[in-house]
Length: 119
Image (cartoon, rainbow, N blue to C red; front, side):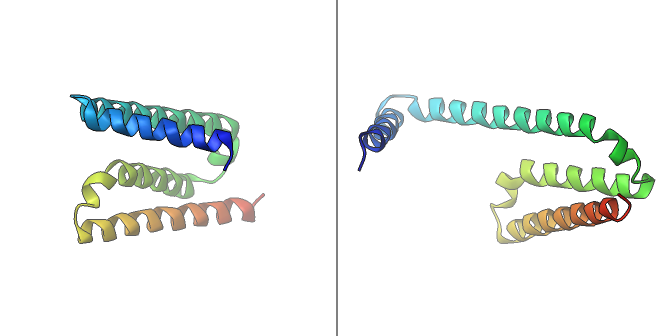
């Protein structure tokens, strides 16, 4: 095992001990988790904005129905990811989450096929 791998394992162990032993460590870990989650959402939103600006002409060339399908699929995917914590509390919720993500993915695939058929 390399020195870098041992160092990284040590860092993870020290952080885990801090969360476990320090009073309020769980709250601090929850705060860091929420900050990372917010950063992830901001990065995804930025990437979507850049992609929209780059492919705006192609998006508008899809027509109203396919553009609506694209926006609806992205919206359903965003809501499914946002509600994943609550949906995975029950078996039916997990099944609903997978159905939403599968439906959004299939719709995005259909929109992509429509785009490729006219390009």
